[in-house]
Image 1: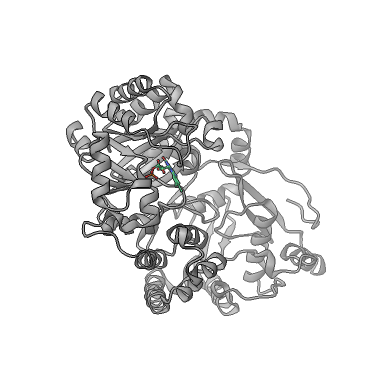
Image 2: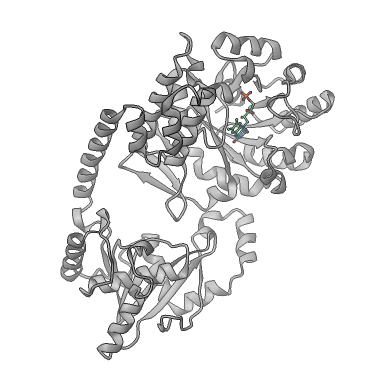
Length: 532
Ligand SMILES: Cc1cc2nc3c(=O)[nH]c(=O)nc-3n(C[C@H](O)[C@H](O)[C@H](O)COP(=O)(O)O)c2cc1C
């Protein structure tokens, strides 16, 4: 795309500004429905994005970037393709580039946050901390402009001095960015302080790339007020944060809608994309905003703990029921296409000839007696039947310090596909797999929907009838990781590589390869009496 074309994307537009917690997928889609030209994501820190795994969520029709514990960091879908701008929090050029490369195929542009005044950002050298570090600003933006295929922009706050603000904007323009967002408040000013429209105007007059004026929400509740703000700042475009958060229909050509209508439409998107409940609650409360004491639903929303409760409070039960029903149908179709009950069950031979069995089981602490855990049950079983003690081998993933464990019993290896927060949890999950495959009671006191006794029986039958795949049969990295967990040489090699070495490799930009490396964890004997 030519430079002019990249810049024209930001010219004469009205946009949803980046807002932490607010600008997740439902709000972005809602803003687009109402007429926003472009929508920004919330700020996502480069380090966090780098440890995320890209996942095609067939059930929701989204692409998700998730952490090992399943937390969704960025969810996007086809409806916003070409319209979504990804905002990055960063303090380092190479890291920013490595992170942005992971998502550039899904977004219309990448924006760097240079205005966040929060302690967390400033301490990390990000956000508004960059405003006074010209070399860093230059290196981050030029690296992104040269390394990415999509347009790059940044969003700044103004500096206390108008001429210094203009000088900063010119420096930013010289890096080749496609546009610049300017919030007319300094780092130390709060939203109650007046917006310095004259500073934005000075920047607009000094640079030739589009300027996106920001900070005018207090006086904006419809598109004609957006236009007044634009004219006042002589900017090319406007981005709205709080005005859109309070009533997203501010983008409508035909005028804004009552907030209740907006709230319900927001909830429908939250249901459709299975939005995180706490995130949904935050947005609902922001939409209710100054009407908290006026409507009874406000208090109920404050204490809601599930999307179903939101559906009940706002009389959207039928909408939610239909969405859940359709999702269930889709789940059944997907399950059938992926082998039905076989899904998640794996059996293969490792490089050293051992049979490795993986079941989609998980040790949920709340379902077990802490005095008789699956590991203890397995250990007692071995003692009683004079079998060798189970041997646990655990890998730690360096980037987020999550664990996965494989337990060896009588020449067979047992594991599960999930990474756990602690070594103990990982080992307990491996023990559950071993007990389930061998038809032994693992001491569980409850039966979650996705792991009923009936399913466990089916999995056991599948394992017992499944032909063992030859080694090297799969290139799935999860399987490779599990095989490596039993390969002493590889363990030693990875364990000997220091965190600093890995970090410096990361800084060299070969992030994908490095991020899949594991740090092996040493062997010892734990309190359950199981040797590893
Ligand atoms: C809840 C909330 C979250 C925000 N998060 C971000 C963010 O992630 N990145 C960013 O650059 N600015 C963020 N901002 C600042 C806004 O983008 C915007 O600069 C500021 O609110 C002024 O614009 P307005 O008058 O339209 O609200 C946030 C503001 C709010 C109210």
